[in-house]
Image (cartoon, helix red, strand yellow):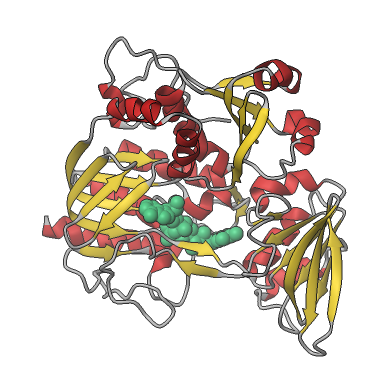
Length: 454
Ligand SMILES: Cc1cc2nc3c(=O)[nH]c(=O)nc-3n(C[C@H](O)[C@H](O)[C@H](O)COP(=O)(O)OP(=O)(O)OC[C@H]3O[C@@H](n4cnc5c(N)ncnc54)[C@H](O)[C@@H]3O)c2cc1C
């Protein structure tokens, strides 16, 4: 389900429309995405000219984050390139024929022929723009660029990241009437939005769907009066000048910056992993597990996330094999007990993937037995990877605050970093426990500190 569809005329009230699009000349007709089904494929794509085709799913946070980016780009490029979307769950046969096995996936066609690399997963607007520009002549690209006017805005506080940490800081700052903007390349919610059930957030007797908790928190932040710039590309960040550029055209200046950009899943760096990402290797069970109904799946990892996600995948898959590097799981005992009670899951201890290949429809992982040094091939219908996280600091420019030995940002008890007027909150900071509650606490502390300073 797309949360916001800005069609035909761009509305100022639509939170996802980049503000520079509001400056288009009045005669410029804004095009929008068109929904098709498999039966329209021949006419719309094979007999079409230049086409971008988006395979999306429901209950897919990256699909929801992509939708407003595509709507905005359809507004810019739509008179030269046709923007189509197709519901993957309802058109599975076509998706399989086209090699689509992850949501969202973007395909590009010219005169019925597939062109350029497909892209899937958490897609940045810049990646799409790069491909769209390749489909046009330099003159056409220049003409499109001339329609965009750079804009700038000033805030007291800019929050980078709309997870529970950033949203909580936003709620407190908004209620304190401090002019605040929250910036996120995805939709607000962070990991909450992709966690199927959360049972330890206080205030609820029953486990809550993560996306609902994300929705309630972001609505509360929105109602507190802060501005949202979400589903945007964060093009550059200068923590010293306190300047953030989004979508390469909008400059945001703030007196103070709060960093709440969280973490990203680690990758294995095994040959084939990059190649088959989105084509058999996934990092999001909420997005892709439903496509493995009655299939066999491999889950790499053995910590809490891996066990929780493996349990979720068994709602769909017939069999789940967990591959873990140690000879015991590192998840907590409650999670391990639930795993042991689930007959669909087995664990291959002391093994690590060394290579991934695709043979027909099957993913073949070559695993090393870390005790004997022998290698074995393991066939499955798909692989999910949950092997820990790294701090998202790479996006924060060249001058970073002081980090700990694992790359997490050091803060004092007020969540101040070593850089003046720069705060850090949530999973990205150096601390022992990374949970929604601890992130919410960090957001509160930073916002209350700032409220006293401004
Ligand atoms: C699978 C899984 C299950 C979990 N289950 C639970 C649970 O049951 N209970 C619990 O308490 N905790 C759980 N956690 C942990 C919890 O989700 C995290 O501790 C919490 O979400 C961290 O919040 P955060 O705001 O720091 O970061 P995140 O939730 O990671 O949010 C960070 C945000 O920053 C954005 N961002 C990234 N780069 C940039 C950038 N350059 N500029 C701006 N924004 C950026 C991201 O898009 C994201 O929205 C789980 C985590 C995972 C992965």
